[in-house]
Amino acid sequence: MATVCYNIKLQLEGKTFIGVTQDDLSISAITKESITKDNQGVKQKAITGHDVTFKVAGIIDMTGGSSSVLDNDDIIDLALATGDSAEYDISYLRSDGNQYDGVAIITGYSESSPADPDSDATYVLDLKVIGDLTLNTD
Amino acid sequence: MTEGIAARLVALCDGKAVLYLSEAESDTFPYAVYEADYTPSYNKDGVYRISADVTIHCYGKTFSEADTLATTVKGLIDTGMAGDGYSYKEEGKAKNCSEGIWAVDLRYTMIQR
Image (cartoon, rainbow over all chains, first blue to last red; front, side, top):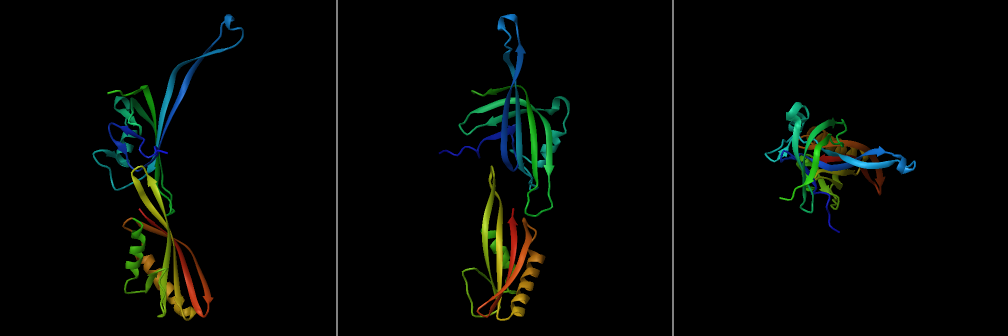
C-alpha cells in the first residue's frame, strides 16, 4: 500500500508552510433549488458552483522559515493583509504528481500555546478559494 | 535523534553521579540506571519531536544512600536538562527495597524538539 499522506502539500505563493502536520481540502457544492408545475411537486436541485476551502495545521517553529518555507511570522503577516494584496496564488500538490491551482484568501489564523512542556504550540490556517480550483496540465 | 535525550542525561551526570543504561549492573553502590521509552512525533518534513518516558532507578545499600543519589540526579536534571530544544516534566517518584537493596525511582517525561 502506497503511503500518500505525508507528501500532499498546499503551497501559497510558491512556498510551503512550516511544521505542517495536516492539510485538509473541502469541496462543497452550491446548489439552487427550483420547481415548476412540470416537476409535479418534486423540487429540482442544480449545482451552480463550489465552495472550496483548505485548512492547514502545523507546529509552531521559532527556528524560522526559508526561501521556500513560510514561517509563523510570515503566515501572520499574510493573514493580516487586506484588499487585493490579501489574495494569494495557491497550489495543491498531490502525491500522484498532479497539481491544482487557484487563488485564495486567508479566512482565519489561530495559535494555541499551552504551558505543559509535553504539549506543542500549534497553529491552524483557514483559506477559501475565490474563483476556480483547476488542475494544472502544464 | 533518540540518542539526544539519553546523551544529555548521561552528560549531565558525568562526574557527579554514576549513571548507566538499564542493562548495566554494578557492585559498587550507589549507582543509577536509566531506561527510556521513545515516541516520535511527525510533521510532513519528518520527526520534529521525540518524547521519552524516562525512569531513573537510583540504587543504594541503604535508603539514605539511594535517596541522596536520587536527590543529586534530580538536582542535575533540574539545573541542566531544560533548554537547547529539550524540556521535561516530573511524573513521579517511588521507592522500594528488594533483597536488601534500596531503589528510589524517578520518573520523567523528557522531550527533544
